[in-house]
Length: 388
Image (cartoon, rainbow, N blue to C red; front, side, top):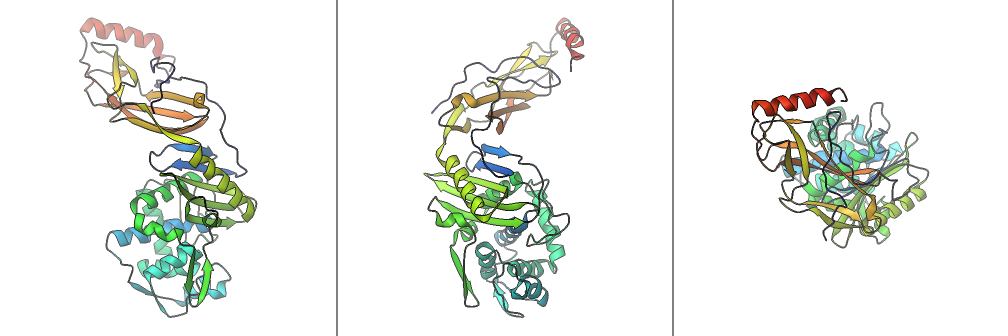
């Protein structure tokens, strides 16, 4: 389906930006009791919902997603295998095992456990001892492993998340955001599809003790196949979840909910709305001109802009009038301009949520203008430059 804007993306520049709006920004299309929430379409990266998405909070057990990313990365890069084994130390047994009174896979002291079983302990049972055993086995200590978690987070684009331990147990300085948790979940699903499947296993038995997956959505028959829950006094009840429905996938992260029951219900409602209320839409075809940027000192006063390929986005099936698009760039662009030169970006909002940002490039070359043309542009710049 092709969506057409009611007005062309042509306008003015100011304050170093060209802001071209098609419609007034409007309110959110969905309400939730969560203090923070973020949801994204897995295929296009379209942000479907955001509420206080960049506010830091302690991740609790949801930090285990970063632990699994480090483990999965080591397996993918062949630095470790599923059949490798690690020994259960007294530290891991006492602080994360049966004596701890926390989530555990009941690993036996001084026993050797395969990496695959430790992964299942963490992804299904949220096992703190499983995390600590992996951390100590891979990095010598949990402190060293936590430093690797933060370093790896920066490598994959998580700028605000900082990890102090492998479990998410309360620790000063440990923080994340719902936006970055959802981005982490999307990264894991894309980069490690085979290993991602562990998050969807409904139960796991170790040391003759069977435990069901702690994710309440797996039993709801809504297409959920992961990923993690967490609870802390500081941030309340949280969840990172993913749902596949009719060939599309949405991923959401939420925090600040009042109870386990409210967490399950609010997550179900948000994911169900996201999976059913949007459809993939082409807003610009490949090589289609998106808009124009003003040029200073060129033979032409403007340069046409386009994306590298088609621009696709997931739009609401109803409320199409909630769409707003703007071209943003540092301007005016100084000539000469080469075809293919990066100029700015197309930003698309759904309601008041910035849903997608697509880089834009010059669709043509613009040579340097004659001396009179450059002089005229200089006069124009002096006339309006003070406004920036």
